[in-house]
Amino acid sequence: MAYDDLGSFLSTLDEQGQLLRITDEVMPEPDIAAAANAASRLGENAPALYFDNVKGFTDARIAMNVHGSWANHALALGLPKDTGVKAQVDEFIARWANFPVKPVWRDDPPWANNTQTGEDVNIFEVLPLIRLNDGDGGFYLDKAAVVSKDPEDPENSGKQNVGIYRIEVKGTRKLALQPVPMHDIAQHLRKAEQVGDDLPIAITLGNDPVISIVASTPMEYDQNEYELAGALRGEPAPIAKSPLHGLPVPWGSEVVIEGVIEARKREIEGPFGEFTGHYSGGRNMTVIRIDRISYRDDPIFEHLYLGMPWTEIDYLMAANTCVPLYEQLKKDYPEVQAVNAMYTHGLVVIVSTKTRYGGFAKAVGMRVLTLPHGLGYAATVIVVDDDVDPFNLPQVMWALSTKMNPAGDLIQVPNLPVLALAPQADTPGIVDKLIIDATTPIAPDHRGNYDNQVHDLPEMGQWLTKLQQLAANR
Amino acid sequence: MTTNVICPRCAFDTIEQLYTSPIPGVWEVLQCQQCLYCWRTSEPARRTDRDAYPDDFKMTVDDIVNATEVPTIPPLLAKTRS
Image (cartoon, rainbow over all chains, first blue to last red; front, side):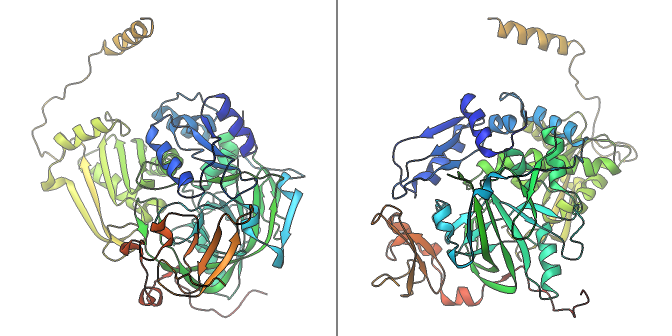
């Protein structure tokens, strides 16, 4: 069953025992962020959190950690909550095969019920904003799906973009947004700014869970996120036109903020504790003027804590980073079996592949570096044989332990692009990248002493099933 | 404008009030007019009090002046679109 809004998904989480309601009064800071930080330490079945008794507020409703576990991620995709990680990635791949599924326009979005415009805009009156980490420069929105169009091709729905970017609240109607140069909105902004134009945007908050997943999926520039949402949901995603700019926004959002990124303007922003588990420094960042806020009656503020991994963002950007990389690699190299890019949004990528001939795995590794997402990520690529499951880290470590000889299997490529937030770069944005070939050398690469490998016994599979049944019936 | 408050982060003394708690008198949201640090007065001292604010997070005028541009502002082209 597809969810059309956040509220219906929260109801399912509640029914499935995956939503904890915190009814005691809490301080806006540090309690809510600390609780969400703690939730991610509960493990792979951690619940979402819901707060409605926040000191100083009269009617705050705050949802945290909504995608913050494999159980919640499974439920977001309509799968049983105990679905395994690899099975979730495989299901994501299977549904991707149905892409694109066009969205459907739907009338009367609930967020049209209430409006603030112009000088009357005050974001603090609409959202119970809270601060996250100690070194953050202010209040942030970090789970909003931001909608924009290509200013040079505004009618091309493929080139429109729905993405999650960090946004700092810097005034009652002033925001800052971080367009990482590798991300699509940066291309929109550049095209607008080079002719001196503002870039109209819609910032949508509190979305159905699939919108958050597609908005954080590294799709290709001309791929439409709503069309992926339809494929993942199994039915078209409902959208509506934003009232001020006519941008396509989710029908079910809690809040829709419209405004512009003001052309050629930058102002001090940050720092902010980022998905890398490190603070970004203070930078001069874009400035957004809010012109209109549309919002539901009694909106829920959905927010995301991020810190020392893993936290919610790591679950949100796990399967959806693996799958597009897998799809893009597979086009050129059908030997590729699986891609695990779920560590820090793919700063490490592990690929399992069959090998055609000696040196093949290294070529696959180099292709990862030149994929669109690889340009900004993929600081380290590990290539393993097809019988190694890249999601099974003990197996990956076995491959590194026995298949990798630093003399010929480490390829360091100097001065490649990486997103500026990657803290290992001496000059932000430029880094050496590493390919580790942990596959078994094959002819004409005769390095090493690889006699026959030990394989699982042919009868092992039957016994595995039998033992599982015996264990289950104890 | 709020008086007698300095920015915990950069020690600037011009601080504006952005918002106050819907239940009156519980907290205020303040913002430094130099480094734009923004905080709620009910937060722990490590986030609100200059003396308790961690050195690692402090910001200077030099930091602000030398902050890099993200993203870089592109060269202005002649408008070709109508």
